[in-house]
Length: 199
View 1: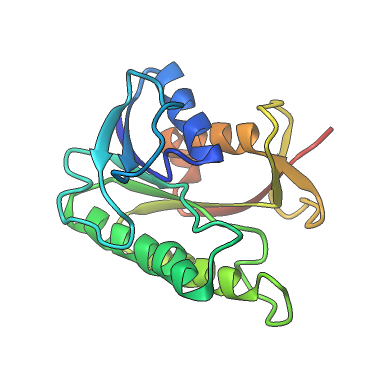
View 2: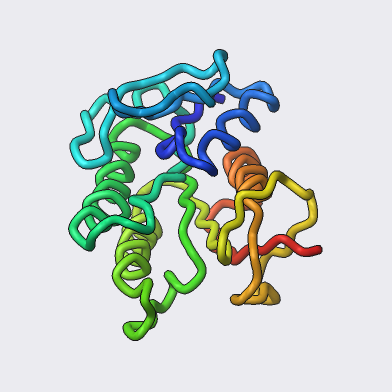
């Protein structure tokens, strides 16, 4: 499948693009002109685009879109809104118009019911808004909500669903594998799932 990956040059995104290549898919990495693309596999197509100003054609010919982007922990509220909320919603709308079959969203634990007293409140509210827009979209969707991310490679040992420890950890390598699974497997259609890596 041809799969557009937003956030392709991030810590999770680069792992995801490689995972998709390993599975024989055709990943399309959405990159800004200023992005460091040195970690992307040569087999991956690169498509210029900025989540704060997306062109209508960005998802052309893609069967699946995976949103693995994030504004980062050091950005202000305005940039969080531009990327994590507005950028995601705009990409969902483009996907709807581009005959994309499925949209896979990398969300976060806590996004289902953001705690206004949390230091991540604004970020979680932005993710919540994007998730809700995806749920009401006209295309298949899957939403993955991992707990706190680590930069570890895939362990192959994950827990999904209601038994996940909200205070646990999730390896970015494992997140990439599960996102790829969600892109491929029809069992993920309409599913919203918490995720952690288990030792």
